[in-house]
Image (cartoon, rainbow over all chains, first blue to last red):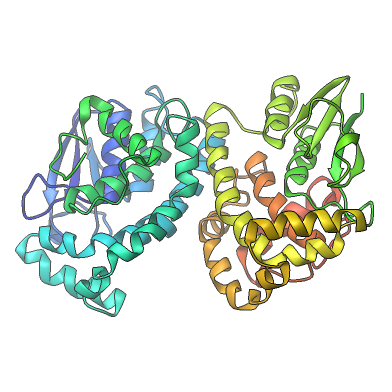
Length: 231
Length: 231
């Protein structure tokens, strides 16, 4: 049975740019599950199936509604144990959480200060007001002010990727020889950035960029085929 | 048969302060292997069994010499497969590398700028000249200058621990419900600092400190019984 996934979309319905939705999208592909995505905007909270937390991703699988990317990964692992594992066991799941926590406290925090104005540009008109107000409250300055010195901040951002860089220099994927959930979590952040911004955050010769290319190739180029900028 | 481990020592032979040696010491205890440590100083390169890279840890196990903490962990996992696993499988081993790379590019880099002068104070007299020269070459300033503003840098250091903090807030150990190699890698850094410095790098209520306490309790307080400062 096809799983339905509510997926954050921009003004163009096929521009999908949530880092959390990309985690789930890749995890579903990893499990080899058929999925139909429903484009969703920030201001369409009443269009999500219950229960939800007013955010995406939300999936519906044969009547079961699961929301939150972490809960979705756990759900898929538990309900589809015969498919390729997302975690590779108990230790793998625990350690993937460290990678996720690094992604959320370092990578996403660094990236949003580079591309937040580009997100606004790509939002549907009805979302732009909501997005600007909520994010400017968070940053206490305008979106334009957040990004105005982004060129100057790029070297520090790239240095902050050192743990990831050293890892993918020495093994093809964060999870080892093949990709798994920890890779999808980190990749979701980069795919988010490239889906809405032409500001290339990775140098051409960065091993992180080579790894990103490997991620874009997965599942017949699932993420590469999606509307985005750069390689 | 008892394994011999060459272990970095300070002026006092029982003050053991290498973050890399602590990884191996905890890994050996995790495997339940008997070990006899040999105190070793930076300038005793000719006292190490061959082959070595002029650094510790080096272990000798029934005539086999293994050097480098990562190689030692792999050796122990391979040669003692019936003992409790250090990695919890292939995925766990790959993801532990990410934690190790974070430790080496963020945690150790932050810590040394807080405690490098305290290391010098604890070195054996014959090591002090070597240590000061090699580290001042690396930092391009005196050891005193490296640490003089450490109080001011402490908040940023603590923020850099966010990925670790969020992880051990939500699970007892980095590796999940029980400790494993990723924990020993991170712990080695903190044990190094507390072995040679009374500068407490963690706030009293920091979840990272609570986790450090759990690590100190392991193996009948192996690391807690070693000469060190604070809790």
